[in-house]
Image (cartoon, protein in one colour):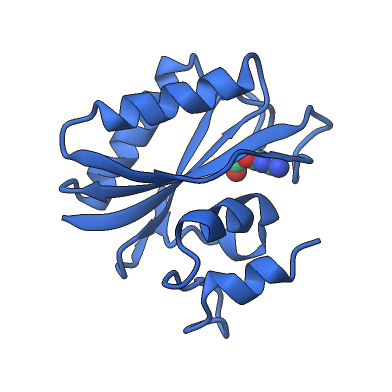
Length: 156
Ligand code: GSY
């Protein structure tokens, strides 16, 4: 079994229901066990067009799935929430990002793990800190070996 962390975000429709639906769908997926769910944070949108505030959370899982299988599950969970991909970085019912997969690195056009922008996204770091305060490294060059804790403490 492998520990992994998934980021959830929603800023369209019933945001909390979308996050809860994602947790429930992940828990019901064969090969995934949900270990912990962070608090839910209401966050200002980062990037993209003007849009409503998000709710964000992070889910810690134990999984038998490989990273690409996990990506497939993440996309299927988004589809359950009627996710429509029209505007890049635009509003969405549900976003499910694979943030971290044990200590593995994946560098493919459609799948980068650890998530390449997680280290400077407060909406990822704050909930990640809830479920993994000590052990997760961030991926940016120069940040190797740094845990999430000091990064989260720098947040406004
Ligand atoms: O990357 C996830 C989608 N997303 C978010 C988000 O989840 N939260 C906030 N606060 N801003 C965002 N911008 C994008 S794109």
